[in-house]
Image (cartoon, rainbow, N blue to C red; front, side):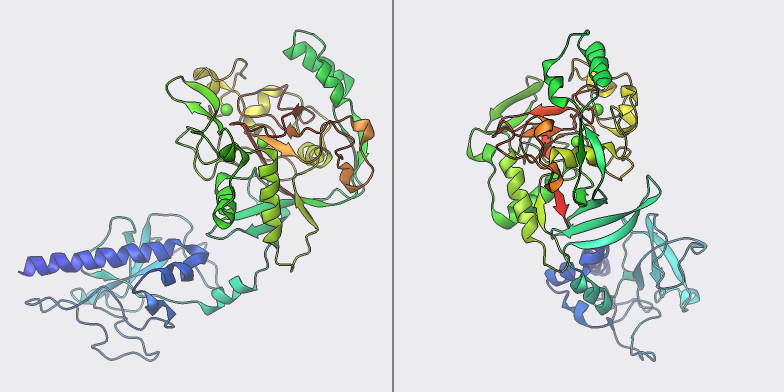
Length: 485
Ligand SMILES: [Ca+2]
Ligand SMILES: [Ca+2]
């Protein structure tokens, strides 16, 4: 009987612990998650006055915990701060304290599996004091002597309500050890979309490739044979008229999912003949095929951190329109759209005029980009591969490689990126609006930029242009977004 009671109580505690972990891991979404959990309205009491996890004392056990609130409250009106059950805290545990702790509102070490428990429990009087602490593994650890209480931070809640959408922040890029200005969209459900400020107003650069670069590309990749398409890259001086924010990463599947969840939008591939995808039996990409869409490319490992693919250019434009609607007006945003080629290439080059933003050596691409490398060669995914191994035979989650000097990731490789405007001669570029091409000037077909994971040095250059169909969709093609402040 005693054993059965204890077992039942442990089940209760395991349940509440699971809720605790859920709320504890939710970071800025604490309140929503707690509100969503039936029976957890206690979170609105400020702060929780009783521990949970001790439904009743165990018959025949003198040292067992009691119903909450049986003893005298202390000066703040809180009960059972000593004894009854150990109480989980949000902080991770550092055995000898954390020497890096900030003096104001310390939050504990940034890493570590163990979390702190405080207050002791009924059978261990030596540890019933204010400073007493133990560290226990926050994953498997549970028991009849462990519970928790909850706290509600009204200030954190107010801060969230006070945030504009999007908001402008300054933050450090850890890989570059440099500060950048970012425009951050809250897309809901914990999903954000971050853009980097690009100071472009009045900046002149050469869009396209020089004759020596074109000759070098012909020599290295085409046995010296002149490639007619390179004439469409003939370099041209362009002056940009406006600063802008450009997506730090390619738009991810998770960000696109928020758009679809909110609008019920169906992409052109979904409404027509489907997307492209990996056929496991044939070990190659096939399609268009109704089996495949932005949700599924046949590659099971692709999660919401991967770039969205299998979208047509108009699907990408619809995403931009939706993103524009997320602007609450507190930060002035004039336009949200796909980047023009001049904007894209200026941002990709980040001040360089070389083949890649880091120089001319294509073997170094594996440091900065997911391209056709040894990993792709091993799986026979590409006819031409680089010697090095970037670790990803297919596409990679965004942001896994070194950024360029502007703090932009995956401008070379990973997935192709749609641009606004249309394929045309640079000599006809307008002088306004960052030289955004017009339908009249171009050939009426969209362009993609940056190359992709199944390609190498010729296709992944800053200057390379890939003309595509107006409803084209690709297992290797996605987009990133631009905002005009
Ligand atoms: Ca690769
Ligand atoms: Ca890319």
